[in-house]
Length: 146
Image (cartoon, rainbow, N blue to C red; front, side, top):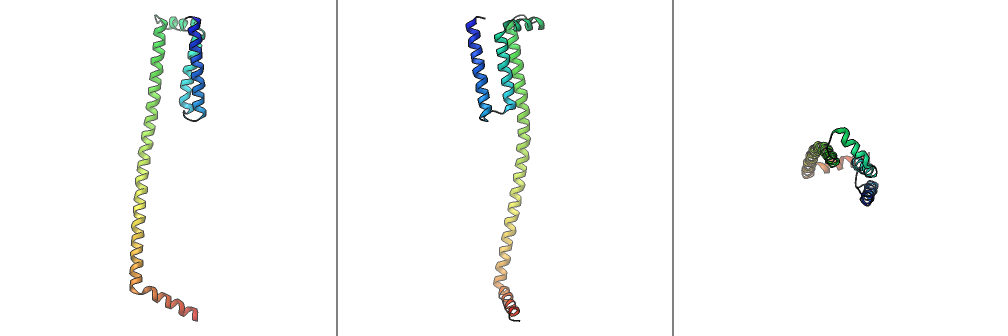
């Protein structure tokens, strides 16, 4: 790999790492997800700055060409991302189901409270219509006179 390409790749990796760090800082990306991308950026820098390392790993694993090693690492990275996102989606699905059930229970409680409130209003209205309220006021006035 030529020196110009190495410089461009290193600059792109550093810019990407700074961008990811900024996303974490402004809380648009959670740290637990950013760590994977930081790891990829650092590995890219390491392989860019020492191309012999990729050749050594390729020979050690018995892979024919370094480009095949890069494809293998990319495939492993994609699988890791898919697996971690599957876990996140599963957790979110479980939490959404629980929250939906809690909301349904809260709506039921609100409906029960509203129906009790309506029953109370009806009882108060019937008491007012029966003259009960006047009797209570008269008893209170009689007690004050004593």
